[in-house]
Length: 232
Image (cartoon, rainbow, N blue to C red; front, top):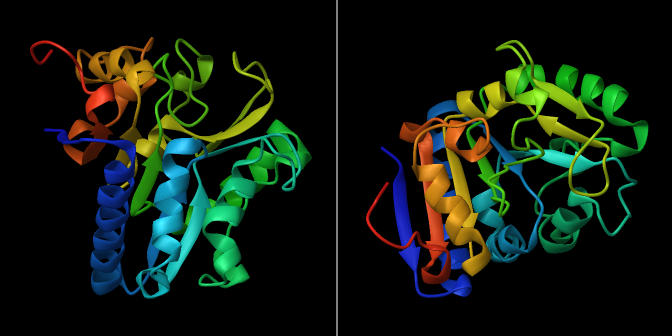
């Protein structure tokens, strides 16, 4: 069953999420000597990354990957890597050789192919930090998209027609997200409440977040994003 934690506000979500991520990374290091963490973009995870950066000892032995990326350069304002760099990576607590950036500037197909080759030896990921869009998308897996039908062998996919700009992106496959030892999904604000409710309802290709493995999913949200009414 999905673990769901409701918090009074967005700051408490970030604090709970940072503590949870740190615990899971420590457990992975204890068991396997290394931890593989995938990050997402967005304003909700950004504060969590700042809190993680304040405790660099929690990031010892951690390799950083990305759940998705826009096909822009790493310095572009839309880049997920840029967000991670500004909130977490610039603190220097993770050496460059343990930071695995999606090269969005190569375009969706070449960028995805290169990332798949690099990622293959790190699977399954220990922890994937995800946000959720108001439409229920996670990473760059959008409602009804053909990418949701990629086979179990697909690791990383190029997206040519994202409904959100920019249209070209790179994303981890649904198979990689489902195979991860855990996904932790963060949601704040009233605009996410309907998406969270739909995610917790019956699995549907129209709500990609609902296709995650629920027994490996932890949801941390604020009261504003919490589903209203009885559980689905």
